[in-house]
Length: 135
Image (cartoon, rainbow, N blue to C red; front, side):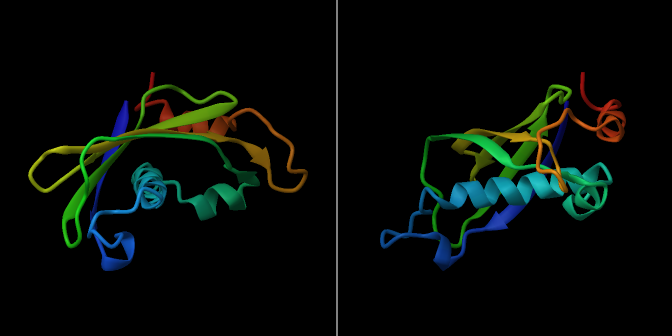
């Protein structure tokens, strides 16, 4: 399994009137962590797209446990535990500055050809990049 931690400061724009992170922002936090995990293994989304692959989100699940609050620094751990085939699952854990569990979640991304927009299996070059880290 490969994982990467990304720290994010909760901005005023992330919160509702109660100073609590609005539920919709967790998807953006997941994206930030996923992007940094990809960068950690040497692949930016720009590079993936230059190679002719797009990775649309197919599914999102979030379990909210505790609120994240304005001006708090949260840690979003993104991980990949299984080798991708036609899809890849990213798992997330969001923790607060005090270590409390704020949320957990999963996103499932597919692979499509950037020209034809047709689904395809994970490209072999991506599998090779992930092989040292993932079962």
